[in-house]
Image (cartoon, rainbow, N blue to C red):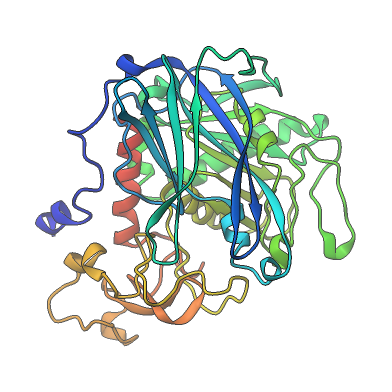
Length: 422
């Protein structure tokens, strides 16, 4: 199997084609905020603001993202040399909303934001989005002069921070920040205990438990005025820091916030690569979007499984491996190979986990007892029962009757951890 792993996801990260950080960047963070506006068929990206934030927490070695995960892709070019100096894939709440029934009849605006190392000279920012065929098309372009005096330099949401788990300098670690939502000032001690508990959940699972020394976890003392979160169907409304809510896209368990600018403002108090929001409620729910943020309720009895499931979405873009969910409409066209690494439509299965399947295992793989412990191609995934396939009969990305990632997901998670920590 070791030889197979060498070739699995070949080219995931090209470490030989990276940019020298000090040639183009300063050791601080540049934030570019924008808006998405449109409906199911349209989208306009418009500029909002630019902010200078604290030290750069990302890798100074892996500046170019060659995984091409995400529904959007950011490219940054140095104007003088016309050189690609930074890139990252990401997804957004707006793109998810476009697949809902509401987007057919309503035009809405959502906030968006990207981070890059602070440039030394003039750059060009380009944002691309996948089209119906999964090809990236340019949606936005802007030239930025880092000497522009309209770049905001104040800390917009200053709060005290603390270390939950510290392994070393952020530039060579995967930095995760826990943000409280719906914790009052009097509940900050509870939040600190919850941070320790959730960090424990993280290290209970492979491959995180064997990579503890590559990970930092931070917490921020950011109280809300009221405890809990919004539950619209019960007419419960809480005045909270991040304006989170159940019933996102009218799905009861989907717990999210559209106030992304505030999320970024709070996270800026620490170095971070990934944002995880812990919501002070016992009600079952959560959600996550790749390189956007992840969120879950604090006190559900399955909090450990919800947490690790959602974090895998946010960190590595892993797809849901279950079917029969009517929240989204045709999120995965059956004539296109999904970009998510753990599902396939078999349109281009060679790009997925084909090399990990043992000879003699049928493709697709029947749900028979003799295959249930093997890697295969099991029908059902990406919210639909037919036409989308997953790597194993069960895993924590499929249902909570499993309490571990399958081998395909572990391999992707390990590569992402390495990408941030090298």
